[in-house]
Length: 195
Image (cartoon, rainbow, N blue to C red):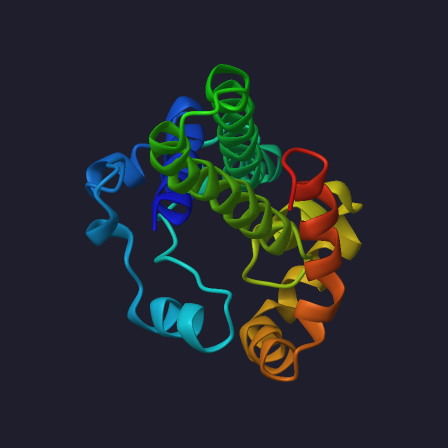
């Protein structure tokens, strides 16, 4: 929930910095996870192990350059998750430096669950960031790709977005997305903390 909440708030703050007050006016620039909860996304998290939140409302008409602004706000969510993964990894290694060499069993028993939470924080945040970079509408990767494509191709690509959610659900239910991104997630995570 924390990873998803920070992800959505990052989108909203990026948009706000670029001149779009929509998320702020909707009360979505908050770290209260209830404000970002999507019932279907939460259910999917338990069924297919990948979930999502209610997208933060963004109005590209407020941006000086709508295409660039939408791309920047789309990058903000996954970037926030990767930064959080690094923070969890730093905490993990800091705890290992401070407490890892101690032979005191009580200290080890107290620190071990925190280390496991840090490992989970790395995996979850890398997972969410990586998943959202997939170029399938409505994921952030689709807006990033659209921002990088020439205008004509970008328009055609975004016209296909009405089918994106159905395609995404099918790919999730068949396990295709998981087969593609799980090795990437664990590869990146294991470069930060031991798995």
